[in-house]
Image (cartoon, helix red, strand yellow):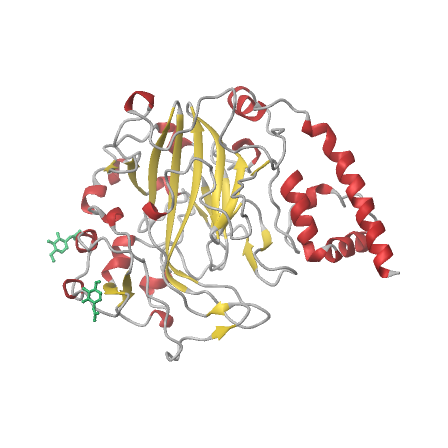
Length: 442
Ligand SMILES: *[C@@H]1O[C@H](CO)[C@@H](O)[C@H](O)[C@H]1NC(C)=O
Ligand SMILES: *[C@@H]1O[C@H](CO)[C@@H](O)[C@H](O)[C@H]1NC(C)=O
C-alpha cells in the first residue's frame, strides 16, 4: 500500500517536471551570454544540466594557456572591471574564526615534514620569505607553535571584523589572482584565508573535520569585461551560477553577494541551512547576514599564467601599492597551510565512523586550486564521475527556518496543504530526489 502511494506520488511529480520543464528547454543556445552582455534582464534563461560549461558555439574558446596575442590583459595588470565586480562576502553573524593575514599566520608556525622532521630555519622568526624558500614539497606542514585548540588570537582573528563603514578588514588582506583565459575571457579568483576551520557537528557530536588554515575562494569569469559566471568553493565541490542571477549589493549594485558559512567558511549564494554530502540534513552549513566584508578594499593582487606569478603594479587602493613585494613569493609554497592531522594518541583527536576525524590536515594554497581550469568548477565530487559542472539558472536556496526561497526545481511548489508538501520533500529520498530534480532544472 505504502509502496503504491509512493509510486503514485513519484509519477505525479515526474509528470509535473516534464510539464514545467518544456518551455525553457527550447531557449536559444548561448542566450545567457548575450543577455549578460546586452540587457538589463536579470533572469537568464538557460538550458539544462547536460550542456557544456565551456563550449559556447557562438563565442571564442576558453583557453588554459593562451598565446600572448590571444590575451586581453598584461602581466601584473588587474583590469578595473575585476575590482568593480568583486564579490562581497557576508560572514556569519557569530563567526568565531574570522579572516586572517597570511603574514601574521605564518609567523605563528614552523615547517615540519610529513615524517616529523622539523625544518630548523623556520623554528624562530618564521616569515613569508622563509616560507617562499621552503623546498617545493607538498608534504610540508605549517605547524602551530602554540596549542591551536586553545583559540589564540592569531587563530580566531577576533579583531578582524569588517568595518561597518566600507566593509574593509584592515588587517586581513584577501588574495586576488587574475588568469587570462584568452580571446576576451578572463578569470578572477578571490581567495579568502581564515586561520581555522571549525567543522560541523554530526548528530550532536563533534565537531569533525577541524583544521588549522582554511583557504576558500570564488571565481568571477569575465568575457570582454562583462561578468558572466560566478563559482564558489564549498567542501571540495561548489556551485556555479550565471552572474546576473545572483543577489547584488544594494548600495553598490555591481557587486554580487556571497555568504560564508559558520565555521567552515564554505561559500553559498543564499541564507539559511545548506545540507551537503549526507542525506537527511545530517551534515549542514549555516549562513546568515552577519558583517559584510568587501575584500576589494584590501587585497594582495597577482596575475598568473600557469608558470609565472606576477605581483600587480597598481592596487586599486593607493595605500596598499607595493605591498605584494613585502609579502615575497609566498604563492610558491605548495605544502599545507596548517598542522598535520593529529594521531589518535593525542588527547585532542577523536574519530567517528560516519563523520571521520575531529582534526584533519591543513589545506594547500591558492596555486594548487586548478587556476588554469576551463570549466568554472574546480573539480567534481567523488560521485560526479562525469565531472559535470552545472551552471545554475536559479539561486540555490538555503533550507530551514531562515530560508528565503524554495528549491526542488519548483516541482512541489503548488502542493497544498503545506504539511503535505513538506512530507513530499522529506520522503523523496530525504531530499535526494529533490537534489536531482534541482540539479537538472535549477
Ligand atoms: C623526512 O623527509 C625529509 C624530506 O624528504 C628528509 O630530508 C628527512 O631526512 C626525513 N627524515 C627522516 C627522519 O626520515
Ligand atoms: C624574514 O626574515 C629574514 C631574516 O630572518 C629577513 O631577511 C627577511 O627580510 C624577512 N622577510 C620578511 C617578509 O619579513
